[in-house]
View 1 (cartoon, helix red, strand yellow):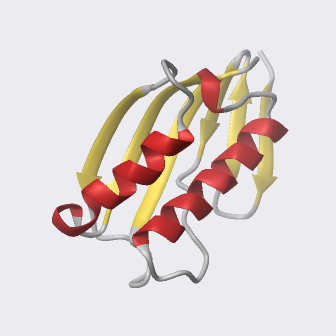
View 2 (view 1 turned 90 degrees about the horizontal axis):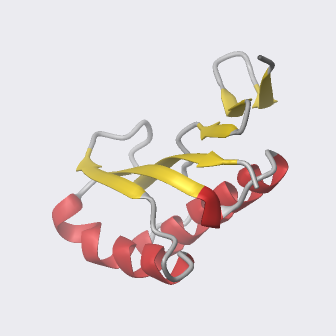
Length: 116
């Protein structure tokens, strides 16, 4: 089986494909400070990587969402997440609170999908 790596740097690949599976590394936002905008930015990055790998959000199998402050940001992140998903296409999902790599990052999302 061929493994394909997308957007590779010395530490990680943005996405890895194996057969019909697509694995995305954790996606984080740029410089926005609001959880709504950060979540939108992350989901846009996910859309772009999935497209490059031959998939899309309707083919998600699983998602893991890391929030810096789950008590403060869970509902707001969920609003953006729910609006982004296509009806009836929700993946399995885990959401946890975590200390994230940079102080300004409020959300990080990683997904697994299948190719179209």
